[in-house]
Image (cartoon, rainbow, N blue to C red; front, side, top):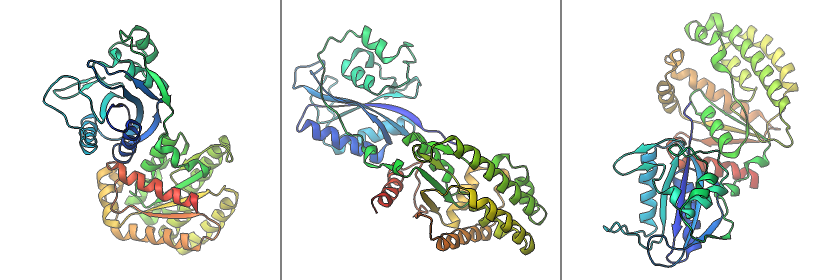
Length: 378
């Protein structure tokens, strides 16, 4: 599973309404580049390298799946839209907004138009002081020093004063008001990727299905009639044990928990794969197990059309999934929707992600968060 990068950006402005410039820039970065996890305090700092009005500066850390060069491209686009005009001169200038890419994980990069970490960060208090606010477990990969150590040896003697705190856009989306959210979806809908991303962004506990450990799964795709019952029984047993063990470790009233499945999926798949007599036996056992399971505060179903599901399945490349027929995915989707209609005591949210890619497009991820937030407001 693709993991997110941790990126630090530094913002500065000394033209126009400086506070408004910073706040607007934070919103654009959060909407278009990556999820802002932390924002520093806002600092007023003297112009550095030239005579001009004082700057407002801050730093932020964000999570994103994008490459460093993609982030740079997006940064330049936001600067341009906010009115930044980059002159041909290399001298320092006043600017309505300046966004610098400071760090990208703990990587070292040097290309024609990008150096990471930023080559002058250790010489600039207006970068180091805000970065210190972020409390990151980060060490400069070249100098092997933490931010506090870089500050101690920095040659910059500028007076940088705190102006005020800044609001993190993520604070407006209090998902943790739901203590326990279960994300569901068809095979290839992206539920595990989304669950993991939300857990990283909101510092949540995770319950992730251990499908890869099931020895019957590859056999089932080769001979469904023979292996359907042992497959479904082993899934039910494993899901029951995992949910019982994992949820017992957490406080369902205090912790924020996200899961990439709800145990009811066992019944949905069993109804499709099992013969009628096997299903009756299975249902009896399932009902006993289901009564003991905690119900999620919010059940999110990620709907995706079959064509897109097949594309995703092919892309992720699990050999035993490559021959899944479209009609099987259609049956699973119908099973989920029938189940959702039948639930009167489950808080359900259906999000159509057929035309959305929350890995490549930050706007699509924010759309999902906004949809969940609407359930909080209701």
